[in-house]
Every structure is written in C-alpha cells, then in structure tokens.
Length: 74
Image 1 (cartoon, rainbow, N blue to C red):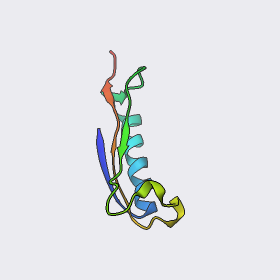
Image 2 (image 1 turned 60 degrees about the horizontal axis):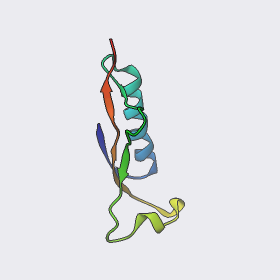
Image 3 (image 1 turned 30 degrees about the vertical axis):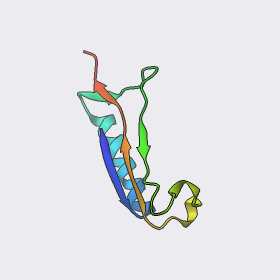
Image 4 (image 1 turned 45 degrees about the horizontal axis):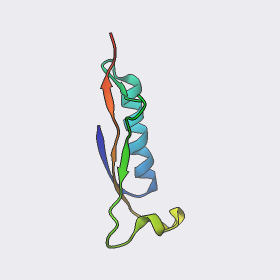
C-alpha cells in the first residue's frame, strides 16, 4: 500500500491516521509484519535534504509511504 504526503504537519498525521484506520477496519488485508518484510518512506533529497532539517522547521512534508500488506489468513 502506498500513500503520498504533501502538506503541513496536520495533513501528514491525517494520512498516517487514514492508512492505519483502513488497515484496522479492513476485513481482507493486514500489515505484513513477517520477518524480512519491510516498509519504507521515500523522501526526496533535492532541492533540500529533508533528513538534515529539524522536524520542527519543516513547513511542507513531501514523501511517499510504502507499507507491505497481505491478505488475512482465513
């Protein structure tokens, strides 16, 4: 599953909340937490390297969340 975040901090938290609420309520899918299965958040490093900016100074969050999901076992 992927979600794009582009907005202020409040928007970022709404996206996180929506993804995890969907997973909790989904009758078919769950987060794939098996060993060796990883999720990631891709962060553009240009024009600024967001990984070097203090969190409190970021006005616009710009990244993509990629989380592994799988069908629930029957």
